[in-house]
Length: 407
Image (cartoon, rainbow, N blue to C red; front, top):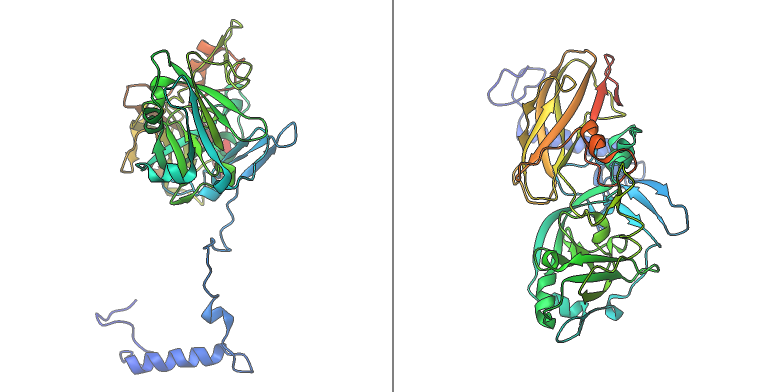
């Protein structure tokens, strides 16, 4: 132990001098030199790079699930290793229906037409001239956690909840473009269409389009990644991921929903009686513990911080409760500020593990008073037919040896 208020001592007990420190440092440099006296790379490090990359010691990656046909499939965000609430652009989940198009931004344009007074074409440069905004919002695939609904939980949080990410999006409000073209009285919906091979299209009610929908060209301080819709995409805060149309090239203002492929046979909720709910756009309040979670192992009894994420398509998260005894008792977690609407919220909970077998759960409440339900409550209403829009409470089983498994 250092017993001097001035700093470390030498073996002889005298205080280390500045000259002594520099002499020792010079000797260290000499020891690191190779026989030809060239500087050791391990000391000087590598040179500068035009575009920064993460450390070679960091290896978090998305997990991939192939699709049934070429160009389809998804990749999932490694939620257990992300920090804070912003997902790195390179780790943002993906869902593709016909591959990733390569689009020259100089040749790309967005057409806004239909039930409007002045149909207009906006280039990327036109969009960047308009008043811009930057907002933090999550995007979640409607099918995220779908296997949990069927009672077939994945073994880790990336596989169970990884079709979820959160970014700072930059662009222009869609309402600005709609004011530019002028809406006719009979306009009630719009159809947003992408420039990918399948021309993915979704119908969106006009009141939502005039509220907070963005035409985004930026993500986390730079241009969109190709997989995220470069050069422009829709961001529809709080609504199912499929409405956030990527590679946006057309907005058709209409008087009714168009029952596209992605909203008639798919992205509906099949109920127990055989009927299907349509246009269940909002992603309801949901939370998940990311650490400790499936696939991890606790080092031993003692203090462990429990942390995770909560979100709601209805607005802000009001509260997150955590249970460390399988749901018998609950206590409030601490929420990181700022708590933003329709964005991820990071929560923390102090826990002293006694080394016993137990279960960890989280349950959130949003600003509307909506409480995250249990799986049993959801099944009682929906049955077991559907896999979309599942937001049930997730439990992690901590075994006495410290291993964490799914339940």
